[in-house]
Amino acid sequence: MMENKFGTQWKLRFYALVVGLLIVSNMTTFMFTTRVLVAQHPNGLHHLTGSLNDDQNVTKVLEETTAIPDTKTIFVITPTHSCVTQKIDLNSMCHTLMSVQKVIWIIIEDSQKPTDLVTKLIQRCNVEIVHLAIPTSSDYRAEKGKPAHSKSRGVEQRNAGLNWLRENYSSHNCSGVFYFGDDDNKYDLRLFEDIHNTQIASVWKVAWVGGLKWEGPTCQNGRATSWHSVFETELREFPLDMAGFAVHLCQLMKHPEARIGVNIHGDRSKGGHLETDFLQHFANKSSVECRGSESETYVWHSKTSSPSLYGEKNGHSSKSVETR
Ligand SMILES: *[C@@H]1O[C@H](CO)[C@@H](O)[C@H](O)[C@H]1NC(C)=O
Ligand SMILES: *[C@@H]1O[C@H](CO)[C@@H](O)[C@H](O)[C@H]1NC(C)=O
Ligand SMILES: *[C@@H]1O[C@H](CO)[C@@H](O)[C@H](O)[C@H]1NC(C)=O
Ligand SMILES: *[C@@H]1O[C@H](CO)[C@@H](O)[C@H](O)[C@H]1NC(C)=O
Image (tube, rainbow, N blue to C red; front, side):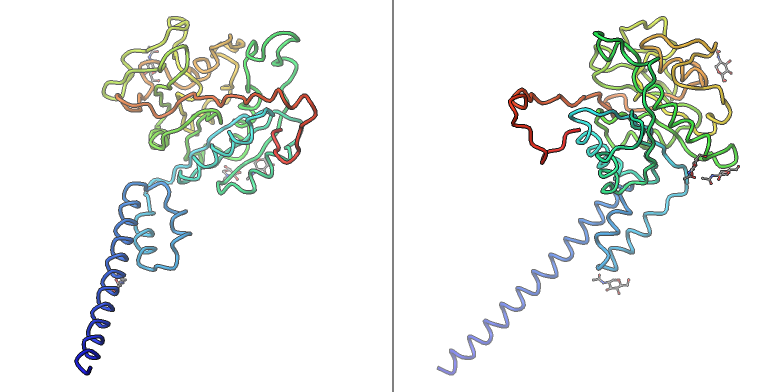
């Protein structure tokens, strides 16, 4: 009887020891995992810090790695217009940019004034955002009966983004890079490192544009050696997509004449020439910085497909799922 009682006590102590060891080893695993996360994703640090505040040691590790010497800001200019997929496109773009450090997201709506849908979405998005609105003028609106893409889209909205940059910054505080990031693309976070490293103007390939798996430059030692394109390749100095380049903010101050939709001679851009005409204000084929990966793509023009909503015509329309 006595022996049995002692046996039980020892067993209990043994179990307590095992449970204790398990807890400690779990904690170690947790801390190790966190360190790995930090090492692999230097961009997302400030968000991690917020959610792990109670563990002081983890916070300390985070603070140590957060400090990056370069203070350049990335300005992402995104034109947006009312359509069924607008909300989810902006939402997914928000999630991408939440993982990027020192980013300011300039959203320009194609509307008279900021809409409720976009305003509400922005309030929930943990990214520094500038919210602008400018309606497309009749000049750039597709004629009746012609498809929307018969006219260049987002021209006035992108220029409103550039104007905002010129109004709020000057040649004295232009430590930044701007990028035209449309909300119907998908992004690999490594793209933002390329954007961040831009000295004057950078280019890279974009997947699923121009009728190809990818369109854009092939790089050698940081310079573009050839261009992969099947659309007016000879007529375009830079045969690439809007998502295929970034420009240093100081360049915008240096070239006050540079606007989307106008070429270096001051003439209006032809269809499909917006990108090359704009970029030519800052660089030429031999001076442009060639970035990205040789074997991988960092940005895809994936486009969100519009859902089939034919049933809505029969009066089933529901306000609980806002689409526009
Ligand atoms: C946290 O760090 C302090 C000081 O570096 C150390 O004394 C302590 O043991 C650490 N705690 C854990 C749980 O690792
Ligand atoms: C940017 O410039 C505009 C126009 O000058 C001004 O209204 C706005 O307050 C500025 N915004 C910031 C954040 O400085
Ligand atoms: C940049 O500098 C200009 C003056 O050169 C000033 O008006 C502006 O407020 C500054 N902008 C920021 C964001 O500090
Ligand atoms: C390209 O630009 C660089 C730097 O601005 C300049 O030195 C060079 O002459 C230009 N090349 C051509 C072919 O225009």
